[in-house]
Amino acid sequence: MDLKIVRAKELKAKPKDNELVFGRIFTDHMFQMEYETGKGWHNAVIKPFENFSLSPACSVLHYSQTVFDGLKAYYTPRGVNLFRPWDNFRRLNVSSRRLSIPEFDEKFALESLVELIRIDKDWVPKSEGTSLYIRPTIIATDPYIGVKSGDSFLFYIILSPVGAYYASGLKPVDIYVEDEYVRAVVGGIGAAKTGGNYAASLLAGELAHKKGYDQVLWLDGVERKYVEEVGSMNIFFKIRGELVTAPLSGSILPGITRDSVIKLARETFGVNVREEKIAIDDVFRENETGGLEEVFGTGTAAVVSPIGAMFWKDKRIVVSDGKMGPLTSKLYDKLTGIQYGTQNDEFGWIMTI
Ligand SMILES: *Cc1c(COP(=O)(O)O)cnc(C)c1O
Image 1 (cartoon, rainbow, N blue to C red):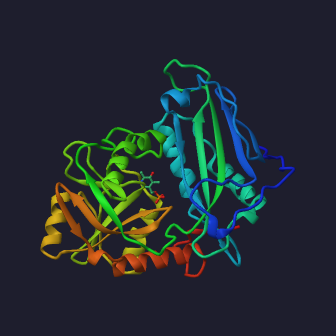
Image 2 (image 1 turned 45 degrees about the vertical axis):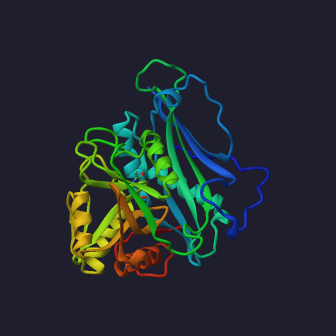
Image 3 (image 1 turned 60 degrees about the vertical axis):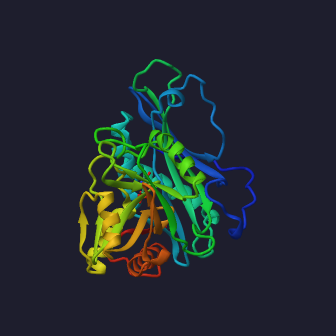
């Protein structure tokens, strides 16, 4: 497929690095391609960032036939680094299959992203901890309110310069363990990166915020017993020297940061990692007997985020004195070091543009 390029006539003023917030400002250009049954993906173009015109009957607006992914580009003196971008496009296709969305050519999508970043490269912020957030999305655009899988889709990529996730340093988060609402069940869409999972999580998140907690920890949808994940992060517990995280059972999102942390813990830091079901009452019990050493979440936005306290059924526990634990800290430094090009990339995760 050819990639057409239409450049913006006027470029927008860029924000200062210290004014960046998450996801409100977008760069000068976007990538887009269309799908029509019978025709496949076509009309690939990089063009000025602009609004869409869609029918109010459009199926994504009614039935949420949509998928997305999220990754970042990092400024380094030697070029712009992407972290495992091929895995994000792979996952976007896996999510698509679950949502009955036609798959796309991953190699072409990645090449188009590279071209888009080249065109908007002056938007990659340079200050420590900043990055360019990349959001590929696919939506069903059929102007039809009958329930069926769409015949027309739009794939697009937008870019947003983002600030350091932790403006005031790495502050451990306070977590509310949700025991009423659930996020996903095995057989559902919990393993797909899709808007519906987020819509399902908003109310619980809002209620937890009102009670003073930063994020919600989800338990399994059947017994509300086993730990699944936190907000938009996978979760790890360091218990008696080992790391434990929920297995990819079908109801949690297979995080690329999760996978990276497992590999780094095992191969770089020699820590045993178990991908096993872990019951929330065991976590609280381990805390009582001194076995619970560290808890952290992993995801592209926050990288590795320490969890300082957890609340479950009238009980609040504080983990590693409410501070960032030593293994959490080592994993954070190594992973961000690889992303910003200051640490050796033993696993071949970086693509430099
Ligand atoms: C994106 C996401 C994650 C983290 O995935 P990464 O690839 O590490 O960014 C975890 N949980 C949910 C629900 C997500 O949407």
